[in-house]
Image (cartoon, rainbow, N blue to C red; front, side, top):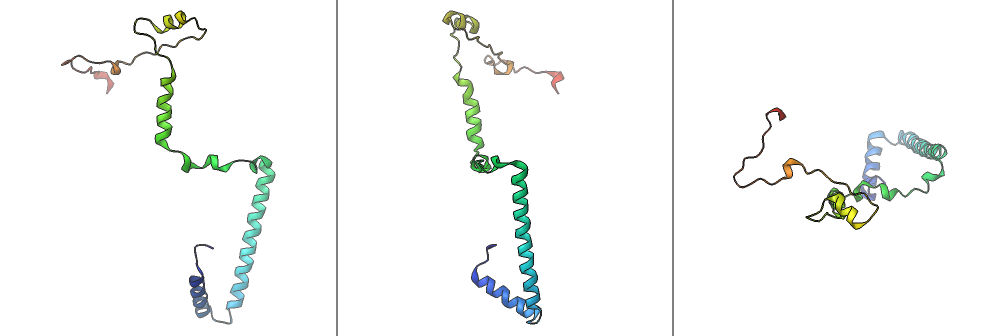
Length: 134
């Protein structure tokens, strides 16, 4: 109950008796009981309204799949990077289209353009610089 143990609850009750006095304490206790009942009634009503509007499929939903604590960004990035490794690489002497044609498969090979930044520079060659890039 809100992280309050028995000892703390007794201390709060003693403080309430001292602050409110024994003559006003029953009134405030009754108001607190009404407030708690009203909040429970409102929560039950909201739950029922949600069930009516969304339907019964919300009851059957596995909420653990949507738990954000289960997502590990390192694992997601690793899986995304390794997905490209599943494609077969063309041989050194053949092009991607030639390799697919030579294999006799109906699958169309996709050639990927190699970005200029990924090309290796010769020893001592300066890196390319584009004045208009900035």
